[in-house]
Amino acid sequence: MNDKTQAEFIPFHAINEFMRSDYRLMVIRNALLALPKLDRGLSAPIDQLTKKLVRVPGFRNSVKAPASVKAVAMVKPFEQSPKLVAAILSAWAESRSELRQQIYDILTAREWKILPLEADRTKLPGFLTRWPAEDDFEVLYTAYTEAHPDGEASIDDMSLMVVWLAGRLPIDKVSKDEIPEPEAPEEESET
Image 1 (cartoon, rainbow, N blue to C red):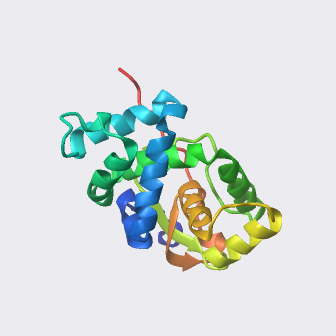
Image 2: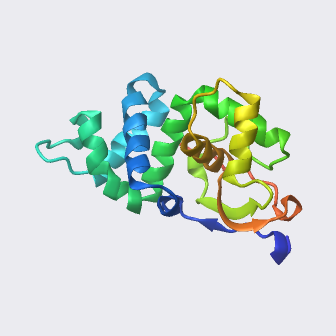
């Protein structure tokens, strides 16, 4: 691979530079509220990281705190922990499965080089920094609203889903042919 197409990653928690504080809290709260309905594989990492990183006043075990209370206490760790960001975004995306599929379809139709839907993005080292210059969030939101006129996702939700599925933050805007193919993360063995 030459320098022009070398993949560069930045840690997942860099996304906080792109999120408003009110939206960050809403994403955390929505992910936590969805956990009881999601697969244990998504909730276990969040529970482990909550126990390790989050302190909720009045609770010896922060995992036991109500989601709304826990979400407020989780904001600071979310700003600092790449693993917590990945776990929360993975749960959030899973809880929004219809939007996830819609955005995946839009990105693949626009010939974005992205991992399959079922890939575990939490195993990646972070977000790629190269973004297709011709596809800013407004262009993608227009494509979303045209494809799904009854869609209820805000531009914030659509943008976050694009970032998570693409595994990219809009830092270095380049043409699509300068973006390398993504590589699926390797699964960790459970030994």
